[in-house]
Image (spheres, rainbow, N blue to C red):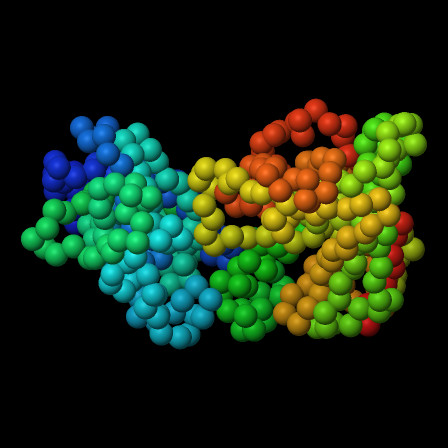
Length: 443
């Protein structure tokens, strides 16, 4: 950081008060930013060993405190070595509504009641850190010029609502914005990221149309999905061939027998809801086992989120081509909070089945504003959808009533594999074979 950049620091280490927690902010991101793709920034707030053993609880939000008029400063490094501040309009535009006035969020009102559900209320002890990922908001992103070099600088700011103690100790208490006469908790300035803005060498053909239709931010996400698809298309053609599904012979002796049957309408109409239904049936215990069939309970995640495959055949070709589903994007996601304990008998991501019973789930391919079909799909194209098979990450014998006290752990973002127990307590692998195809046509 050069001298001109440091002149934009408002609060530094010297502004700290010794009787407060010693918090630090750090940033991480790519050094190259595409002007038409989402740009994610990793933000970490850590607490140093500061002579205080007590935890502290404080409020800090990327939206309210980070990307605001008193938050991150955007600097332009010119070719002549100068540094100029870039004026960001914080009076209009939001992440999702680019042409409306920025609304005050409920979290900004005093007082903030500690209830255990406040999204941006953090508890931090000595040596702890909190890391999250946020997307660069449209009001910063849209004004960047390809080929120019920029710096995003944290200038330093007071944490206006904080208190000594853990969240559980402050439950139902009110946190008020501290006055100028009260002890200041400073998050010092200085951390920054340098980046060069660039335009994509091959423009997305649908860019202008999508930006008019859904706005800058959503168009960035759509372009990101399209480019991921283009990259995958350039990979080895062998990977795109019709990969065989998991065969029934791969089942494990002694494990439950699950069978997946698909169903869908024969016609998909653009802009209308279209679901493929997967019916999961429990047929008993594998043929090589002498064990009696008993009820089971299982984690639905892999059956819901893994193993689905779509194939396309256009009007000019005879062969089927594998399609890649769009990759999801997240504007903000907490990734390092503790794992979450869930009761399997009560949680929506677990299901109990008796022999002969079924459970159904759906995979949406199209609705009024979103599609999983390739962007080049055209009227008359034929599609095949298949469940390729998966291995259930967690299951156990017994009904929901028998597992009323059973607890497992999943990541803090919930939708993922069970992390504890990792080996399913040594029970046989529950392999679910692939299904038959279902076919439909685009009209």
